Image 1 (cartoon, one colour):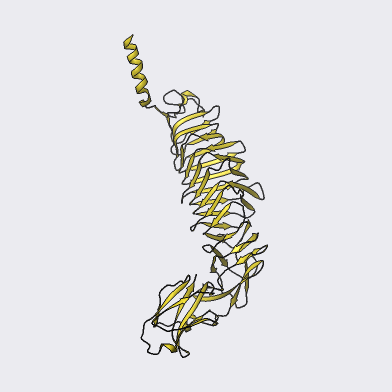
Image 2 (cartoon, helix red, strand yellow):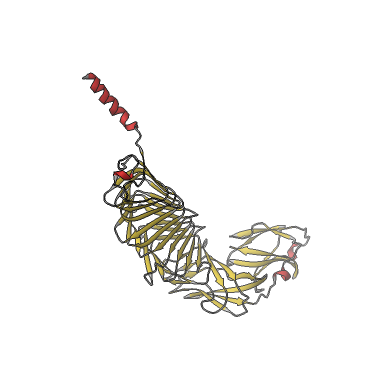
Length: 456
């Protein structure tokens, strides 16, 4: 009797350390059924401790019941179709040519899905992803799919090589406040081939370091004050569609209407254009539809910078309405902008109106080659300038009271004049608007030296 008791105790203590078998799919059952024991090399169905291997060329369907695994590896061009609940303890790895097709059920278990191949989410059946991290390094496609519930620490990390293509109506819907989408690659709302216009809710925290694209007649809705939407310094929002935003929104990145093409990007509700933001505008003509535009349904505060890309040579007097809004609450933009086309520099005056921002081509009264000198008799210590800069003279001037530094805009209009009373002076910004200027050192009205200076 003691011997049996000792044997039972030994088995009790060593059983947690016994490693389960690897389950390799061989398809000998003649069907695709996960729950057909003959389809597995060990003659049993995988359990919560199993490491599952599906070799190249095989199709496996998880349909008739729930399943638990430690890990799954999809090799070669294999495919796993999920149509029931799956609990993952460790990880699922989808190789380059393999496909994970998720159509129904709950995926949970604190595991990680590493997608280097194709992750397809489709069908109108109920889907829920809970306590799972998806690291997408390739293609994740949502098509013909309704609401996808995301909860309990769900994270979607879309890497720099990853593309999340949503060609469907529906939502990533966060059931609590603990689901996050981190995008370093491409997140795109595209035409699904059925609906003329498509709407998709992103009801989870979003951190964009890459590109968010919205195609024409498509809409991303980011509509919950309980979530955060952060378009970072490297983030780009582009396209010809609509973003409707009421989340806690911060933006230090770039808006690019049309992306690589000319287009109009519509923003509804919150258009965050802070001082660190950039609006990229491509211009290939002065007619409507020949240059980029932002259309804001709301009352924006506009404080960022513009990046103009000319694709033709504009003429003096041409105007470009690059932003429209119901009403602009406040506008703090550079007074003048410059852009080049085929080596020629063009100057634009910026007009902040009640309901739009318009750029007008103006004559370059001051030409850079005429007003800047190769031999500078002073140094600008801080350029670009935020609040103030130091001007240090390179030469000794015995009669300083006859010296002045003079600031001009690119139309040749004098903006600021300050007497020089030492070899080093402080030039304060005060009311100077952001933009590109010319600073001159003058003696009794004669120009000794000129340089470009930028006020941020």
